[in-house]
Amino acid sequence: MNAGGPVRCPWVGIADPEYARYHDEEWGVPKADDRTLFEKLVLEGFQSGLSWLTILKKRDNFRRAFHGFDAERIACYRNKDVARLMADAGIVRNRLKIEATVDNARALLKLQERTSLSAFIWGFIDGRPQINHHRSFKTVPAETPASKAISKALKAEGFRFVGPTTVYAFMQATGMVNDHLTSCHRHGPCAELQSLFKGPGDRGSV
Image (cartoon, rainbow, N blue to C red; front, top):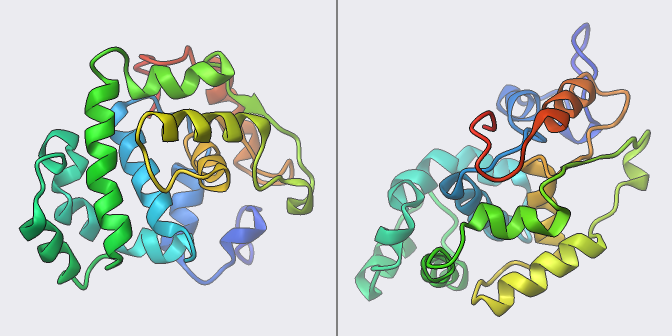
């Protein structure tokens, strides 16, 4: 919570306005666009072992380095592209995660031959966001049966760095669940957006 400002989820803190903006404008808003979902899934994988704020501050650099998360372009990356990325101080230079991003782009294109990433992922919860009513972050789980099922299915499709905890963080961020605390000023607005969400293909999503 900012002094004299709106009540926010405690993970935001008060020190970084960019973090507050992300919390207020993005986190928990339902998303159904494949490129947006792919970007978020990749960045959650990069976040593993780090703070999300670290990734958020580098997000524009990631977008530049990975050609706007265009899966068709990333799927064509070769060794020279991996070397370019490993030399880019603006991103997280982890070879395994960089190579996994290339594999994930190829897995996405293969998946899209029969369905969208949006339909695939949202299908596990029947296209309906789960609106939770947590009063404390102590009750917010790190993973759920749904995140475990999605993780298993993504791995079967060839995706990497998509463990159940990573997937649940992805679900929170993309509005598949509403884990804003009930005391947070964003719980109600996100719940309203989620209640109006019509599932994959909903152009009202962000």
